[in-house]
Amino acid sequence: MKLTTLICFLLFLTTSVHAQEKDKYGRPPLVPGIAELKIGDQVPDILIDNIINNDKRSIRTSDYKDKLLVLDFWDTTCSVCIASMPKLDSLQKVFGDQIKLLSVTWQPEEMITKFFKTNRFLTEHQPPVHRASVVDDRALRTYFRYETNPHVVWIYKGKVVAITGGEYITKENIQTLLDGQAVDWQLKTERFDATTPFLTINPLWQDATQSPVYGYSVLTGQATSVPEQGGINFIQDSIQNHTRVAIFNQSIFHTYQMLLVNTKSEPPKFIISPGRTFIEVKDPSRYLYKDEYGNVSDWNTKNFICYEQVKQGIIDKTVMAKLAIKDLNNRLGIEGRYEKRKVKCLVFVKTDKPITDTLAIEKGGMSIAGIVLMHLDMQRKFPPAIDETGFSGGLNLQPYDGTIAGLQKEVQRHGLDLIEAEREIEVVVISDGK
Image (cartoon, rainbow, N blue to C red):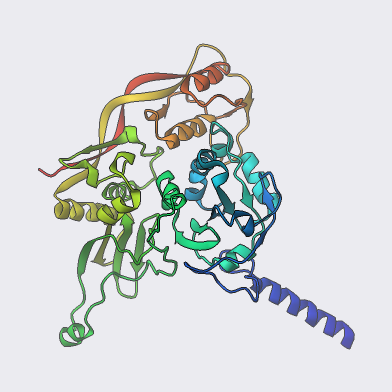
């Protein structure tokens, strides 16, 4: 009886310890005894194994002692990481064996292998993306510790030269390092609490007046000590009885884009692509980055903004978003809004032929029209794509050459077509204030 009790206790203890091993993101524990590496540190000869989609299953950091090794930490929940994978593959081809752009994830091999085979954005991209990636990683995450993705570590000639966000992976930045130039890129900041207000109220003021804070708003330039935040923060604080909206380190256009999306009770069923974007101001270069504006990091430093508004009471986010837009319009002397305009579109339509080779859609799944149109909009080089088929099922589409003509030919085989036509659609407009 005592032996049985002891075994049960040991099983319980083992289970409890195992359950505590993973962190809040579900990641396995760091490797004991490995010290964290920082900018300027020499990198030891690390064995990097469990690499998929690569000509070698394992490599060593010493293999790149005279080259540039870039580690891009990601996981399958990071949409920004996934969206950047075609660019990483393209840059790898441009620079060849001068560099190694290696994706790294803690997630298991089986999951990642399946992900690369089934993710339609990657498989339907032309050419299809087969990113070289470390899987089941613990060691690299221990050497280069991080909380959020993307997390990029730059190792040149055996030394850590930068730790950045994903936006720094550009052809220009890679060439800068290969040319032997020193870089002073912004260090990616990890530990930042987005729920904390920008400002703190002077306690002497509150003690003296005992008056509540009814509201305020703050607009600043880029906060270099704060990481770029990919989204918008809405916080309803029932204890303080106020509602807060905050956006950190974003372009003016993307700030408006995020606020406008949240003015709707239901998220829009379209991506705000370049064809849905109209910036009609005296100096458009301040609002949204383009390659012609030069170094993206310099542009971010000059043009990023941070914005916060606090209002008394518990306020719905759609109302809060509208209040923030009104406030920003006044502060910046512009007007940001949704507007309906007639523009050139790619329209997915039925033909007079029957729809063939259909596939069933799982509950909650996306129709073939939705998948194709999202794929077109995400490439950001085509007119806005809209669906007029009325078809909610799936199709067994075959790979095509990545062109509109190629896609058009493929969908025509199934009784559908993709045509260019003008349609009145919802767009985002930023114009000078009246």
